[in-house]
Amino acid sequence: MKNTQRIRERLLKAVRPTRLLDMATKLVAVPSRTGEAKGVLDCFADLLKAEGFTVERPDGGYPQAPAVAVRWHGKKPGKTLQFNGHLDTVHLPFVPPRVEGDLLRGSGSSDMKAGTAAAAEALLALRDADALETGAILLTAHDLHETPWGDGRQLNAMIHAGYSGDAVLLPEYLNEVLPVIGRGGLTWKISIQRPGAPVHEVMRPAEPNVIAVAAELVNRLLALDVQLSGKRDKLAGAESLFIGQIHSGEIFNQYPQECRLEGTRRWLPGTKHADVERQLRSLLDEVANVTGTTITAELCLMRDAFLLDEKNPFVATFQGAYQSLSGQALPIGAKPFCDDGNSFWALANIPAITHGPRAGGAHTLNEWVSIDDLARVAKLYASTAVEFC
Image (cartoon, rainbow, N blue to C red):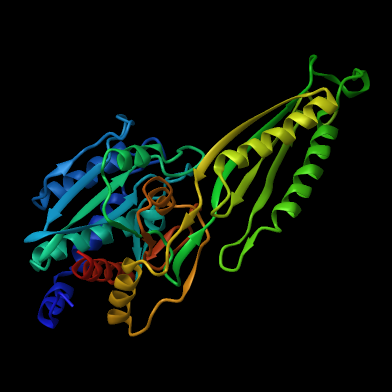
């Protein structure tokens, strides 16, 4: 083991919960819907500059909200561990930060501003304790994470530009398992349209009924979901097609011109994103040809599928750090959502572990995160860095 007990004790004491909470609160206080995260990224950059770090602002192809990157080097060359977080939030009304007992509440507190602050606190603790003997830390934060308003392209461009480490930790709100597999996913929006103008239903023409066509399409999509469910992983579950919304008409007795459907498609490692899109578009074209309607689809990739080799040395390193702090190992499991770890694996085959604070309410108006658990995450990230780098 590289680090001695003395270094470990010094490092853990260097984590300052008050400083961490202050940073997390300041980040939550800045509204930052996906595509509009410049303000919070500027805030994060200023907080890190105030701590004496040199902050890079790569635009990742999205100059409207330049990302944040900080590099911290140990005493000798070695591996680089990356801490990566997104600071954009879903498009819901803004909820300002407030502290209630052990909980920090507010927009992005769970997903994932507070977790990103914990990663930054780990970096600060490593610096303050002078605990990084070898290697380096790369801390990154960005916009364009949340689908469908973003598609991950800013981070993807950063990865292609070299803003990546030898391994990655992501402080998303998952901490009960060590995820080694996750499904890829896309969102879809389908529009079924007929020719002609809106008319009263008693005057309706002999044209396709878009609601009837939607019913036919729903049946076919549900049948596809059953077919897809045959491909299953014991941890991640089955491939799927989900229908979440159906909309049509302006009033009860107007013959509608359009029917809209929305949902998701999720797939396992081994299934190609291009094949997923091709299969779905082929089904839509077939229904359109049979019914005489025009069917268009907007497909937005969340992330491709994710896989982590359990035998990768980084897994053992992380497990060792976790066990030293908690006294037990994390069970191996699956990642239920798509996150940036999927991109690191799909684009660069970089091992990525998602592990964040105890939190809840993501994608709702009631987000919260445990303040005490933020400090635990900071200590875990810092300890993992000492062992890995």
